[in-house]
Amino acid sequence: MNFSKLAPKHITQRVRQRLLRWERKIKHYNILIRNVNYGLSGIVFIASVLCLIMLIVYTGYEHDRISVKNMYHYFHLIQGVFIVNVFFNLIFNLRKTLRETRPIKCIVDVAIITTLFPILYPLPENPWSPWLAEIVYSNKFLLITLCAYSIVAVSYGIMHIMGKRTNPSLILSCSFLFCIFAGSFLLMMPKCTYTHIDYIDALFVSTSAVCITGLTTIDIPSTFTPLGLAILAMLIQIGGLGVMTFTSFFALFFSGNASVYSQLMVKDMIYTKSINSLLPTLLYIFLFTIVIEAIGAVFIWMSIHDVLAMSVHDQIIFSAFHSMSAFCNAGFSNLPGGMANPALMNSNQMIYIIISIIVFAGSIGFPILVNFRDVFFEYVKRGWNWLRGRQNGVKTVHIYNLNTKIALYTTSIILFISIVVFFALEQNNSLAGLSTYDKVAQSIFNSTTPRSSGFVSVNPAGFLNVTLIFVLFLMWVGGASQSTAGGIKVNTLAAVLINLKAIVLGRERVTAFNRTIAIGSIRRANAVVTISLMSFLAFAMILMLLEPKLPAKSLLFETMSALFTVGSSLGITPLLSPLSKILLTVAMFLGRVGIISLLIGVTGNKNGSPVKYPTDNLIIN
Image 1 (cartoon, rainbow, N blue to C red):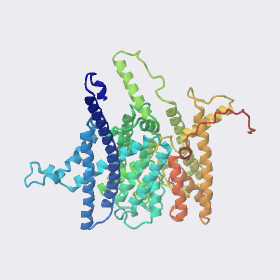
Image 2: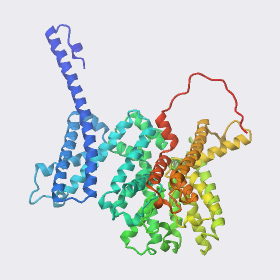
Image 3: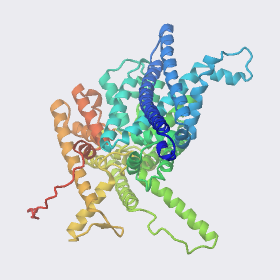
Image 4: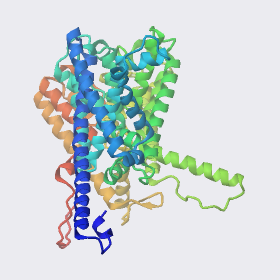
């Protein structure tokens, strides 16, 4: 506020000068507070990252009493940084804090302040609430609170970075790289494995989990402890939903403080209609994922509780792990032999049907799930209007968007054809000796999983060569766009085929379901197909040069499985050399983030030349 302008004309010059000095002091004070706030935010972000690293080390490694005591000194130092930050915001940024902070963030702030009680007020001999005192004065409460506050601070910091107009493709790629390397070090911790594993194997498994592939160079059940399996499950879940989806959810849900640019970027990632529906859409995706995985785990348990000879606790872990792995299309199993375990193969086959359904639910894509939600509410509104006698209200004409129609239509056709083809080709080969019902169940399972999930019940090495070619096609296609599946996506295949139909029929426009497909979508689909074939050719040739003694058929299958994040193998993965493992690690990463997206992120979106060149034709037969 300009106090000098408010002063009446008859006030002396000395008073005016004092008002001006006071105004400069206020401005200097505000600038100082803002600079301190920026500096404190940076310190909190660094302290949060260090806190999470220390918590990982504290949990995953064995420590003596002196080491634990020294670590708690650092935990208390980080605790002090967090407390100072909370009080600073309450004192100097109270209005902004009350306006932008969400209730859960307030709970975390209150929990941090609560950790002061053991320091300021020692535990009394007779507390008024023994159970509450036992919680507040425990070290577990301190560590859990520090972990929660650190997650919120790191998420908010990443959203702040996203608001700096950094290329979204680079942010996505870097976030996957960070999770991959962080996961590799986590899986190397002594408490995560029964026996020591090489770092290249940990990196390979971490990449396979984050990129939801399923290839592994080691035996998962005999290598990883329950803590290692929990970390592996966390990596799969983060990779399945997407790193930025996780980060955006935490930042928006806990703090609600994100720039318009970062919100727009997340909006484009999950294909929601508006910024106002961003948080509800993210929440819907999370809840849908949790509900489907929970329901799937229940049905899996019901199908195996009297089949597998293990305790109820182990059966629950098995069911939850496989439901999550199936929905994320990861293909990891914590059962010896995986889905080919004799106990499962000799069962009533219901587990294979259930997992196929869960895999399908994860492979249809989050934009379709969002469209299903909109369709549900549209029908609810129509029903409510019908009950109230208002049938002439405004109705949405196209409640199913073009993406949903094309993806579901193409997926249904491919799934039906693949079941029939697999049954016809393998009924007297790999499925010989099974009943007709078992053959149908195995055909459904082995036609669904090659499109990305990587679960295997019948060894692909025993398939006919023609079946392997068809499986390679399914691996190349994958699932729907913006899903947990891999491949070029059924949307891409549909766009290319519809464009081919238009060319053959001599049509100028590419249309489907009474809609004209944008030229940009057709061009991108053609580019995805071209790059996918060129990449497969390049990786396959390099892998053959690195592994001249292994069968070419197996190497081609392995390359396709890694590049399109499927996870199936003909059994040569553990036999690969370190260089080959690194090559497939790169292939899995590129297959998950998308080669085109990465190229756009590196080169940037450059506008075309302002010069318009003459049009000419190429001779294309």
